[in-house]
Amino acid sequence: MDLIDIRKKLKKNLDKERYEHTKGVMYTAGCLAMAYGYDVDKAMLAGLLHDCAKCIPTKEKFDLCDKHHILVSTIEHENPGLLHAKLGAVLAEEIYNIKNPDILHAIKVHTTGEANMNLLDKIIFVADYIEPKRCEAPRLGELRQIAFHDLDRCVAEILYDTLHFLKNKKGAIDSATQLTYEYYKQFRKEA
Ligand code: DGI
Ligand code: FE
Ligand code: FE
Image: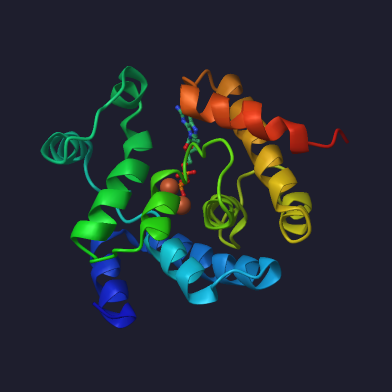
């Protein structure tokens, strides 16, 4: 499947806002790849597809997890939004015919992150948070600058803010997100 077909299919499977976000992540991932010497096309493709499972209705998400033998933890059951990352990796392969394991892995971990991520994982994790259409997060201006000169620190600050946001709204914290932060907090710099 070529890039044009992927984009067409994706546009059908996402709502308008999500498709716009997806394009923002794609271009931002491309820019970060340039800054850190990573394959630009590969980063853009991962960015394009990272949220490919986001707009699937909840019931169908559970059914698809069942079908593909994806284990659903209690916290994922209670916060099914989290499942779009794992499910996205499976659908990117199945529906969009992506075979590259790095791209599939970056999609899989893009929401919670994981300890010691590789460069593509970090590019997608950061691009998702800082892309131009994202506007609700605090200190976006600062994080957008940090992203282009210290990627590990940017990952750490994003996790810090995300955990803070979840604690504030009394959202359940996935142990995966907590573990990712425990690893990346070494790269934080107190203001
Ligand atoms: O899919 P996007 O909205 O583009 O971004 P994303 O995949 O990073 O998802 C962001 C949401 O995921 C954000 O509202 C915070 C939430 N999230 C991240 N880690 C956790 C979490 N939600 C819960 N409940 N628990 C987590 O550990
Ligand atoms: Fe996402
Ligand atoms: Fe996203």
